[in-house]
Image 1 (cartoon, rainbow, N blue to C red):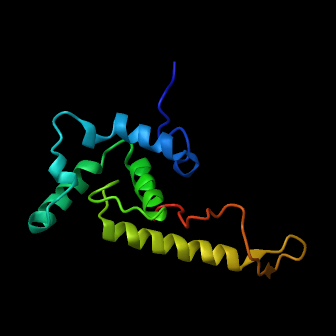
Image 2 (cartoon, rainbow, N blue to C red):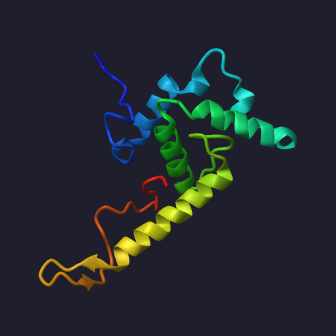
Length: 137
């Protein structure tokens, strides 16, 4: 018997893309039979209402964090998921990625020295993903 990883059982950033996709396909509120797909993929002329509705619908989704991580990783690969993912708009996701990059840059540029307890510049960190994706703000 296989089980779908959930965002509460495994840290989201440790899930593979396939596991993220599977979790969102199986458990996402957007996949419910009564869900209105247009809420997650708003047309420009009515986007303000539809985006707020999708964000409201995503608020209690059990895979919201996985969905957001999937969107951010997909965008990091040069693809841009259209619409609402993890309760965020494409603009909000770009802002989250920029914040992650600033956070990672700060961690990379100054790391504590183990011997002296002072800070030492470093050039790389094993916990930084090459794609630039990190924890959601």
